[in-house]
Amino acid sequence: MDVSAPYESVVPSLDGAVLEVLARAGRPITGRQVQRLARRGSVPGIAAVLDRLTEVGIVTAERAGSAILYEANRDHLAWPAVEILIGIRETLLRRIRDHLAGWDNPPTRARLFGSTARADGDTSSDVDILIIHRDLAAPLESEMESLRAAVRRWTGNHAQLVTVSESTWAQMTRDADPLVGSLRRDGIDLLNEAETAA
Image 1 (spheres, rainbow, N blue to C red):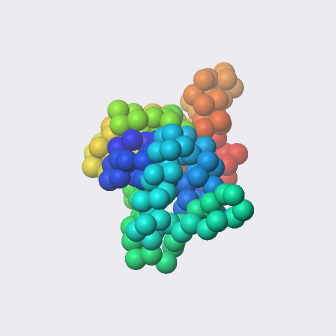
Image 2: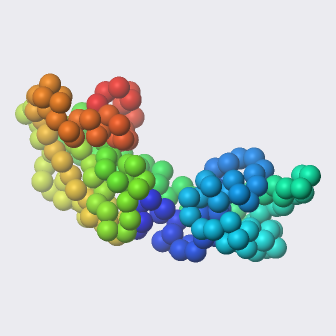
């Protein structure tokens, strides 16, 4: 799965990027704004997609002076499918959280990091997960292998698990380990802990 645009697993065309932008915008925007926010496609290419999506009714278009404003039509019968596609990332995070919660020795902290957290990877990117455990309660190898296998089934991507004890993490923090900085910049909490915990 392309970790920067998970919906492309199902909608590999520019349509997916346009629908994601309109879904997240929550208000009418111009075609140029769609192109800028999508960070892909040309203005004419985006315009063609918007015309097609307007024709089938999943997008509405209204003239506002010399501009045309586009908005997602959330009443369209196909809109629930769009919401599922643009929510793939959140679904992945929820599934990882649920998986970790079922461990015999659950981690004290867990963070998604790297290209998946930054949403700038591609289909070959690993799903990088930091797991911090109590000093004398490391996760079982079978639990970690189960998570690796689950992530592979869910995404098609490999999971790279980095496991450290709380005392090792404290030392890494004192030593200003590059991983600590990366997690502070880009890490995504997987255990619903306070954002300052890492």
